[in-house]
Image (cartoon, rainbow over all chains, first blue to last red; front, top):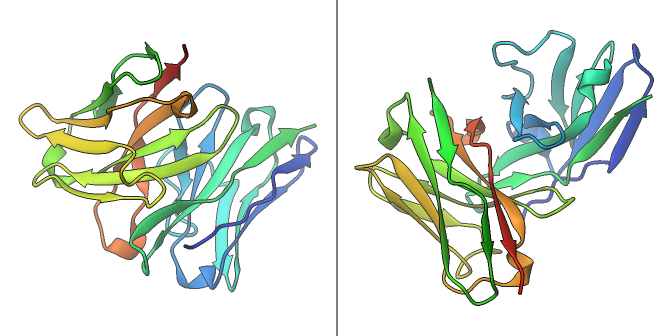
Length: 108
Length: 122
């Protein structure tokens, strides 16, 4: 089955830029979506179709996808960005929806 | 308001049965697939399966096939996740999530319920 690999944790100082990666076999050929899950809350989509933002998501949150890695970038990180982040794709070969293992973002 | 409302937390004993629910409102319920996602304590999201309420077409993750049953009642805009015999390893938060409309290669989950916490303990 298709596997998405994320770093378990990323730490960044407030005001700096955080990058969270999501690796997978030829992931650049798939559409990648990103979810933010704050402590005690349900996940919320923050990036879909690699780089599109839902209404209400600030422009400092962006996404890219190429080759074997998709990346979620959060610029000018704020304390409120501290959360777990998950990437997700649809695997066409199995018709399964697949989540990455999740990355905990810590704001220093 | 467009929302998915899940049933309340459950405390059960091993071997008991359980059915939890997810009710959609504010949109055309039968037009959207609804997925169930497990999150074990301190762990990540796991896609369990998905159902199309209009005809109850269902797809399971191999990890959950035979372990749970997903069903739907389109007359009440509700989907269900069911266990016949709970195990302590079923302790988890369970979310329902709506899959967006669009071509298959662009599927993602655009609306989530708040989750149902299931505690299985003797």
